[in-house]
Length: 155
Image 1: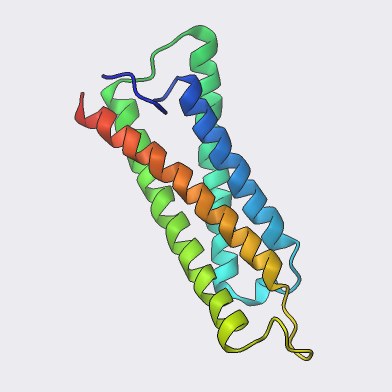
Image 2: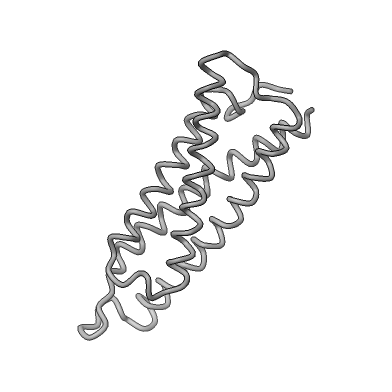
């Protein structure tokens, strides 16, 4: 298998996984800090999706640290195929959650004006920051899944 940016067991792969984990955790933190988020299914789905992403990325970051410490090569076909499937699943869930949450915020902020309405004031800026972090997380996952796919194809 080729040595590519973001490949498992490399420093760049570790940095991608840490970036995924931190951005997903930040997305959860911003969403949880917004009052009333639990009333909206899309926001709950975003938290669930980002929670899964934190677990997946943290686990793979630990695996990368282990591989770097003992200088073990993680690029065998079975492991890479597992990474491909896991990255594709989490990428799909993360993109779906970020898009659905963004749609709700656009509806409430731009169309219904719930963010500026005195009666129905929602913390839309916190929702927006959380969703932005979710999209950044998805961008990191997209890089990882692309690299894993090409590693698997080159095996």
